[in-house]
Image (tube, rainbow, N blue to C red):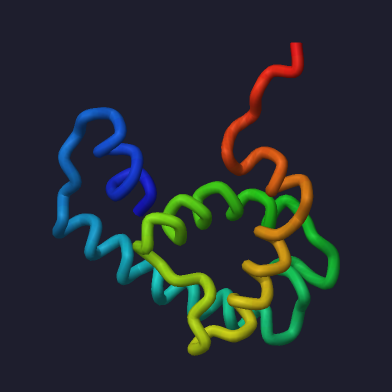
Length: 103
């Protein structure tokens, strides 16, 4: 969904609205599954943050910030808790708007 809704327009392409709708519907189904997984774990692979969680941050942030998905939706409370946790981490906050040179 990110490539169709975010990257294509940025690089001068045109979003295929039918494909974007299909991808978002599939993503919504996956988010329901994530919410279920997160009902018994703090993070996607257990009670410690792993690469599984970290991998999702940039793409989820792009879709969430552009209002294509709502990761803070009350209908998925476990996903909302997880998103609040991982997206508020200092490491993500320090790079989410880009990295500037210190040189």
